[in-house]
Length: 137
Image (cartoon, rainbow, N blue to C red):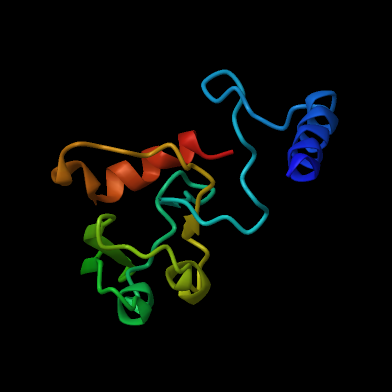
């Protein structure tokens, strides 16, 4: 009966002098894993415009159907999204939208500090997705 108690105390004593592995969260950020998929963001091209050409592949490949796109054409017959919405509350962060994009416009970010109390803040439009780039390294 005393042997298990001594084994437990020995284990506690051995861990007591080892280096702590706890992060002090608000001050120390936990580095995400290499293949971590956080909230999406859009990239801009060299002219400063959004790269998205509104092909609709991301909307077609999305298993949770959380992406909605309305397309339009400019005077040079180039396609662009009039309305791009991503419902992040429905997103399962699978990364299919990033893989399907032929022009590399949408990326999965590394941001994991993203909690809101209002569901409307999870509706991401084009401006929010472009702004999210600032929050991702």
